[in-house]
Length: 198
Image 1 (cartoon, rainbow, N blue to C red):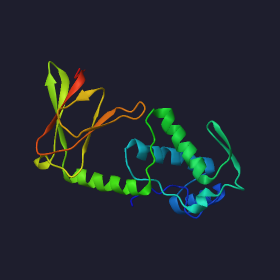
Image 2: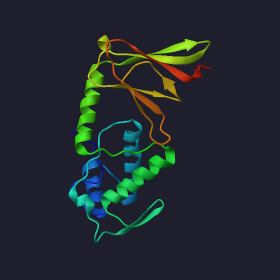
Image 3: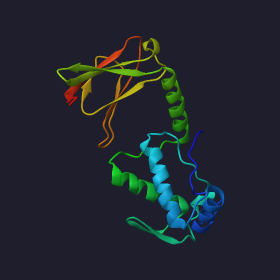
């Protein structure tokens, strides 16, 4: 399973341990707070890149019972390294966006990677339908207009299609994504409100 390594090292259960390992193995400099600033920058970049890869943590990172107290943004108290990292990254994501953060169970992450590889091999493409300087719709195609998984298309507002078997996904304030099967023909969508090209 692909996953992102973090600067919370697999064998560390304290801030001092992971900071020293960061310095010794990864060219890190400074304190635990410097490590956290680096972690915030690096790991939110992965999330904003819409990568599906989970982040890698280990049992030692869960040590909580006799851990020290920390203040991470608005949260204070005794925290494990995993708790510190999670608070830091999630607070930064919520500072910058209102996107939902969804955690999948291991089997679902695996299926997500299989679906992504299948989709990549279908070579999806999209063409805009333009009228009077405005985008009024889009048409999605794949190699031979078939694919072993659905194709996600994200819209700035509402959209409609005559294609059967589509699934709408909209979580919180997330934009609408319509997952469409490809069954032998390109699939066209009409935007609820046209988008100006100017």
